Length: 283
Image (cartoon, rainbow, N blue to C red; front, side):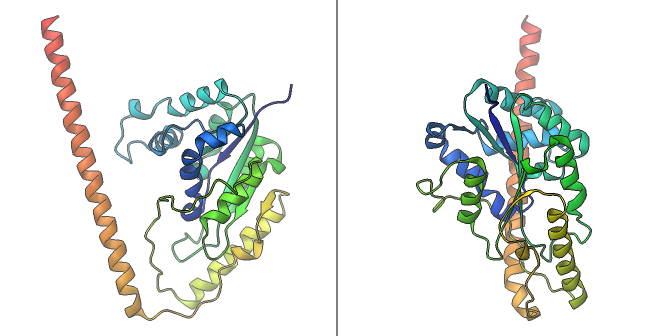
């Protein structure tokens, strides 16, 4: 009996890659009819699963017991299902060797695949972000380079293009599973004014990424030339003020929402502890 396939999307291009999680949940019923199962109940559960694996729960204000075992729970639901298993959580791209092994161990028994969405580095990309070691971790853990699939995003980000390519990798059509109108989370990243040397360094980085993909014999979808940032004229510094102000305002709103969420959770925890103490006294 052939093994069931499991595809884990771990992203790098979060601006187009995040559409996969949203689309998988939105189209869960028609996908199930096609034999594709997405066991993550929500984006929040998948987020906690990433914190579980990466051990970064404290950074995000979670307790260990709020995230522990979440990834295992998702995989157990996947094992109980039928057909192809698909999970999308871009944060897992930079998992360490031990964390990659832990991720894949929970999918033991499946024919395991990893899908990486990738786009040309931009002015927000860390100049020392080396794709090679990251690829090596996944290839080594899987033991089969052809099961590491890379989707290269075009210069103009198009969620539909990423979704269509992902469907081809997994083995389902997307013609009737449109992503038009879906609310895909985006990061406000206004362009940054950088030197000519910095821009050339980013172009060199994109070329290095392309070479690292070619040398490893991976399944690459898209044009590797798109990994090299296009040459663009330096923007007028005044033109950056509007987008930067908008991004800062959105960041402040996000911080405020997170603070309010944290205050609400702390209040609920305090109430539950008070109830527990009363029960203890009355027992």
